[in-house]
Image 1 (tube, helix red, strand yellow):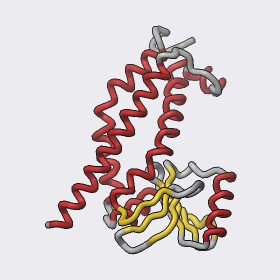
Image 2 (tube, one colour):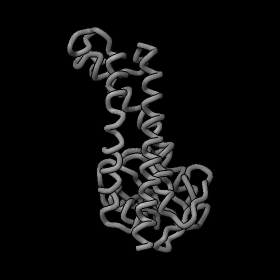
Image 3 (cartoon, helix red, strand yellow):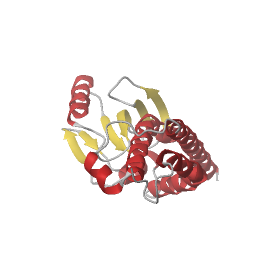
Image 4 (cartoon, helix red, strand yellow):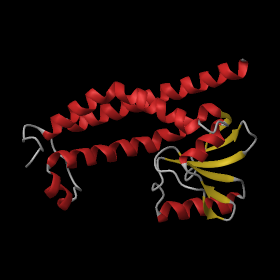
Length: 205
């Protein structure tokens, strides 16, 4: 019974942090929407096809992803035995309840590591000579990728299974994200409508 209670407490912490993330993200979107302009860069061809509203949504997504990159390490922290912030390119040095200990880089999605960041991670890994992993917090799932000998990049299902010890950990996390996200949906769409303005059903310019 004690283990079950602890697990609930850990997920409650995750829920609070997800709510903090949405609160900050929506505040950023609301602030941005008051400017009334999308700003550069906007894909001209995408804009010409869909008009202003899809362009606004695309810009809003980039803002949300940027903020998620800052927050995603803190979603897994409640499940660790030890969690120490580390110098870039690592997110933290941690110890999991299953016994694994090492450096981790926690990223928002499967496409979050470009060639420059990959080189930085590999360089730091070879220099530290310590165990390390790359974790993905959400998004498209994928089998583990070898970034360097002994350094693997895990998809969200494997990430949450390793961190929580629960094969359904990622499903639990997704449920929390959708549950909390719905609380902010009206504010999100009001910010979108403010940016689109009175320009017809498709926000045409």
